[in-house]
Image 1 (tube, rainbow, N blue to C red):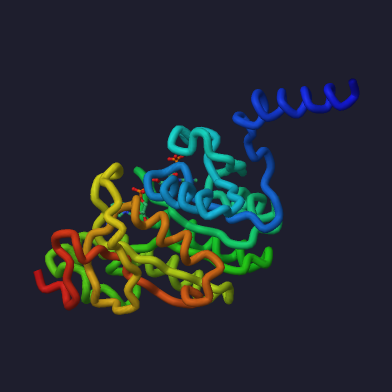
Image 2: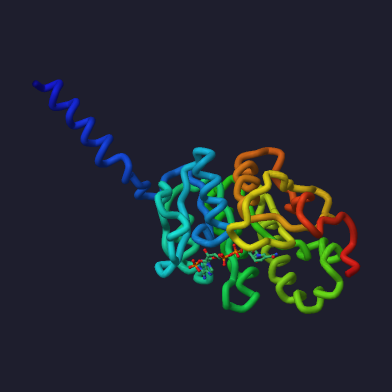
Length: 246
Ligand SMILES: NC(=O)c1ccc[n+]([C@@H]2O[C@H](COP(=O)([O-])OP(=O)(O)OC[C@H]3O[C@@H](n4cnc5c(N)ncnc54)[C@H](OP(=O)(O)O)[C@@H]3O)[C@@H](O)[C@H]2O)c1
């Protein structure tokens, strides 16, 4: 009788409870993803979950979580432009890796410099082992790779993105910077042909759907530590290696 009861309980649990199981709380060792509800961030989260990483997403109370529906992730809430929120997020558990897939939306371009500074500071202060920053081709030393005709218009954005890169590099945390140049519409199917290039003269498109798995492959990967990459897909139009003359 006791066996039957235990068996029935297990059956009820597996049929009724498991399919709805969610990861309720941030846990030590998690990967903390900023911007995880966004177009790029959600592809990163999906790839991390597929690779068996335990994931916590930093989101605003107002963030639409629909792209992460059904995924076993936990959340910490806050506004990345408020340093106290970023500090509290990093103290919610002992995170192993943090990933920045943020985009500014309608806020000023200084968003990238401010959020990057807070993220780097509190990742370092709380012992995070690696930070992966999604940046842009045109930042840092790669301005010469960026199309010459757009350099003026993008000057302030690139300065803010360069400041975020530098804050991370100077923080002492192992960094991985993945710059992209052109992102096709979210929903464009992955080609499986995108790569991370060390050559900062590489310029081209890459889908967010390919960037997700490329990001997950860099987590805990010694080959990605303290490196800057340009993500691009040689099978997509516009791929080039060289200066941005046009
Ligand atoms: N080269 C290109 O063609 C191109 C095109 C587009 C984007 N990008 C770059 O690619 C990256 C990702 O862009 P995306 O289009 O995938 O982004 P997205 O869909 O707009 O997602 C942005 C994410 O950042 C979050 N976020 C914004 N402000 C925040 C705040 N104050 N506090 C907390 N979270 C905040 C958003 O949260 P909510 O859900 O609350 O809004 C969302 O999760 C960015 O670096 C962007 O500059 C490049």
